[in-house]
Image (cartoon, rainbow, N blue to C red; front, side):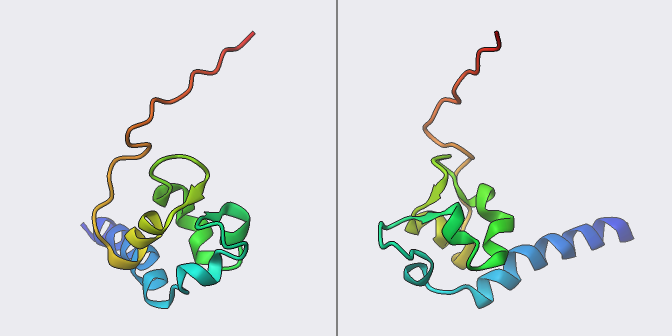
Length: 91
């Protein structure tokens, strides 16, 4: 039971703490292309840890709505919503 509570506390800290100190989207979008790339995310280290979980359409960039999931704590759609994973052929 203690281990379970500790796991919940760690997960909560990863999601809530960054949201409280998160910079505005526009500050991280250095090139003003309306997305945050993984390279741009490196300017705010906590975002790097959750980048893949926030990138719901799996395009390697965060749009305003995806970044908003971090800020608001709203439930995001399933990963890669609306996209079919590509198939990798091994030769």
